[in-house]
Length: 288
Image 1 (cartoon, rainbow, N blue to C red):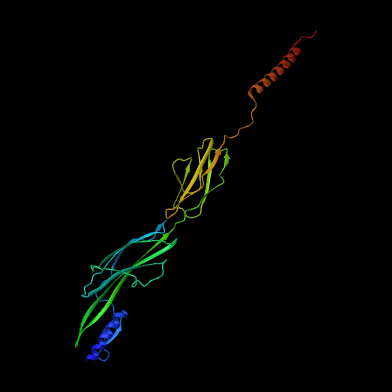
Image 2 (cartoon, helix red, strand yellow; image 1 turned 60 degrees about the vertical axis):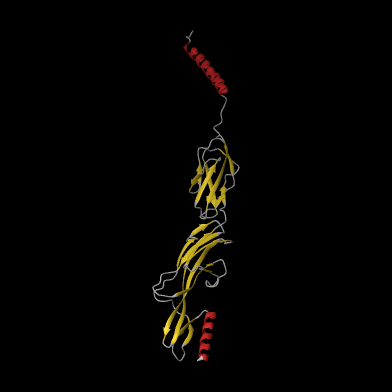
């Protein structure tokens, strides 16, 4: 009898150390180490992931991880032995969510996490948070004190997001340091990534939002400058260099001084009138 008790105690200690569970299968081999499912009617923990939000774009390599977890409802009676949470990020080494944990120390079935994550690399990222509850039930057995069965139930929630800390590159084409003889000037530019918004600033005035290449109109004669801005989906703002150009007065047809034209015209007309008069007089003169 004493030997059987020692064997049972030893088996229980080994089970606790290994994280496995005891169930009774029969008198010939009354105990075996296995994993059991949670009791019927026990719901997994509930996770509310506040940050990061799904499919968010950010221009920072820092991100606040904020979530709450609480135990699920259960229609079965059991003894809660632990309630804990953890997270797993795709840019970090993969870890067993049951190893590095934050536990519910006051045993009220609720945990709130607020943690600032840093050094997140650019690109598509994902983070998964876990919450699990461990418990124990005692099942009476014929001729035995009872069988103690340990179990756990786990849930998780994942959010994917995009990190972009690089500013868009904006280049204005064929306009820098030019003199143009038009009051309407084409504004052509390139952006090296998809832009959520584009605007230009002419001569320090208010932003003018455009969908793409545009035309600057109503430009007075003189020097002007323009800057083109582009916003990407993460909120980064890129700016072109300040481009300076000059609008000149359009050139007209060649002109001759009015005074010179008038004098020449008068002299020609006078000469023509004199000749015409002399010819007419000769024609009308009577014959002798």
